[in-house]
Length: 281
Image (cartoon, rainbow, N blue to C red; front, side, top):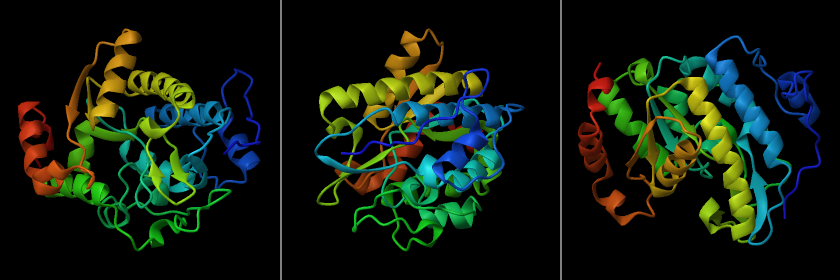
């Protein structure tokens, strides 16, 4: 069971003081968001979500909880600083980190070679307070490749050529920043958690998503996988946000269809959604 005992550091206006928050956690502290641009506001939403998530405890089957928005904050900030600029109309929304993707790099779908060699993200990655022996965090030195992330970023590398072409109109975010690991080392997705804590977790994540959509001003949210799509549609509609929510097949190797031809299916879906024109160099 996981519970953080670190208290948050509210600023005078009731928001989280980003610099004090990082220092209190002993985390790696890059330039803190100052509220002066879209990326800073985006990071502020994430910090506030971190505080709300630390109020939760996660019972069996969860034995370890990893939050890369704490220990990989440096690389995550570098990703946001490089690519979140506020003129983007499309938000690709994943569910939560994978053990060899965002859990290692702090970047959504963050397969190491894609992050390091294509997105050109560098920085320091720390360690979570507790790690499963089979799920060690080695950051950008991780030698394992995450299939979902390799497929996801590999597609856009093929279509766009350079990252700036993709990020001119698009950004990538995860609904939930936490990764859950069982005693055996199994990666547990949020739908696999006990109902009460799952609902409390996702309610907080839904609220943060609505804030993110307002901050970014996107017109379309593409849920990567059914769960992300359904949560986004429900949350944004409940908040009265007039945003188109659509879905894209998840590239996970757990999905037999994705293992056959995910790239082809994804390209056809993006064309159907009229997104392909935004990905042309």
